[in-house]
Length: 212
Picture 1 (cartoon, rainbow, N blue to C red):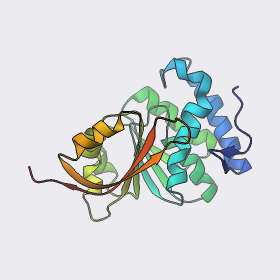
Picture 2 (picture 1 turned 180 degrees about the vertical axis):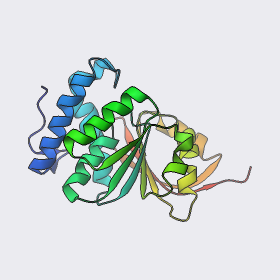
Picture 3 (picture 1 turned 45 degrees about the vertical axis):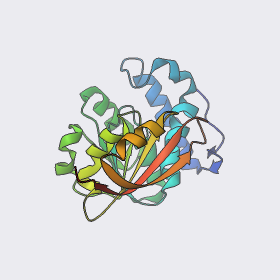
């Protein structure tokens, strides 16, 4: 097993219980990744830094017992990691939306075995708003460009609740932002990644569509 950092992630202390849950998730992930393409195989050797620590930034940026929707959850990043942090609080919830049945099966096992707070919805993202009408926050990682992500999030972000969205993006994120502002107005905070020097986490709030 790849060793985890000692009781901290991204320079912040992590409880023993959360650390043990994350370690169990990492072991489970490596087992399933042998038969299911959960992430790019070339990144498995750096699982903790590249995926777990990177995912943990989301809940560390917006802590507390929030109701999350994680779109295109795939191998559980960031959704399962967020759900593990919520287990320590005993409150909050993550709705993991993943249409691939094999990946959805993995996510269910990960939730069950780690005691994380969440549920899996094996449906298309376009159908998710009917199944999950409300949330406080939305996350997505390695899913689509910003404009498409905002289209996905619109059913929730254009509602009265106005949740925030958190998206991991690489070095070319500004091009996606420039393109998205042609169709949407939104408040944007760019959080520099503490894991990948050229990456950011885009925090988006107060979304509205521009008149076309």
